[in-house]
Image 1 (spheres, rainbow, N blue to C red):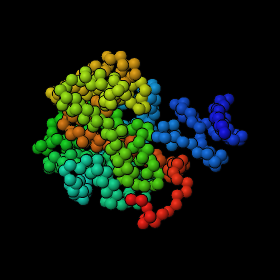
Image 2: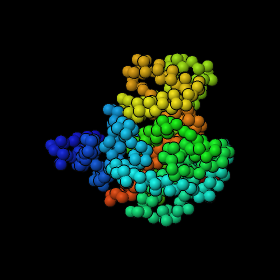
Image 3: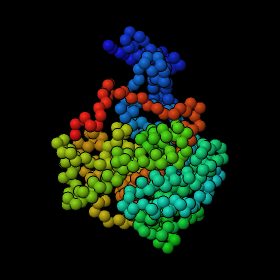
Image 4: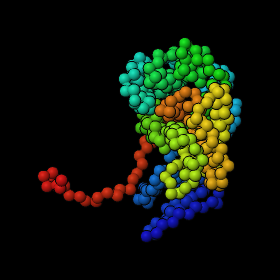
Length: 442
């Protein structure tokens, strides 16, 4: 029993892929994206041949058409709506990028002002949500609190929970999610610290307001503008990243026409995993371990290179980026700014700098292109700001919210949206006899 797959490339309009199996040939169209990626459209594969594809981790499976974000892991390219992340980080703001992701284009000055004012107008959250956040044990992970609080919003805004909004109602919902999730994040932190909540200030920028709600002691936190800008850039870099685990989860849940509160909460739960959004937390935990060992980071560089050693150098390399993470270059500058402005003296940050310097000049890491990634620097920034390690993943969710909203909106508006239903290859018992409980071996 043999099978082969071939492609024809006479011209783009008639591209076909042929699958030959058990003496039969089946043809499927080859679709091409605007950046030149090609894919075999196997929508009718099972109907035509009785076969399905097997792709653990879905690393070679395109689940949708999307015009939001493009990345090329080999070239180290990341674009939002066709604009390179380097340009956006230098010239834009987090709220402007949120508008771009959700509404497909850069806003005019009037549109951006209106968008920011609408977000700022959602300067409170229901008392029930505050009580819910307060009800969790002190040692509960904040991602559990945030997931519960996010889906609980559907109980307070039933007009958005029972049907997918459109037009003006959808614009209201998007602004509300951006405004209230910011408040919930700050409230989660303050409640865990047993501090009084700080009211949102409409006069401040998105990140300025967030930092004020987080760290104010007397109504004003007096955060340095360059530190605010650094956080703004950090959130921009996390705003979207194609069909990663959490984004794919948001789209999968949304494919059932679930509301944005349920879909975003599902995304939060996926992001929680240490292989996804929890990576920056793992970086700090690694630095703490090295510090407890005496701070000799060169020893751990050697351990990372030793194939017989199980130690992993967290925050270096990337599953998708095979060259370098374009976000890391940008965030390193923001990291340097924050450390300089705050005058931070922290042994963990000194270890991080040492690891970075050693790895960037070590042939082992250079040849394998194991450069520091965005998770390495983001954890350092959050620590410098005074954000506790367990809150790092919540910060990731705050930055990723515009991308989730854009992806959910794109899917809900797609004329070809279908409920996600992956197939499987069953490898269990074919026939197994039932035995009564009395006769089963203990």
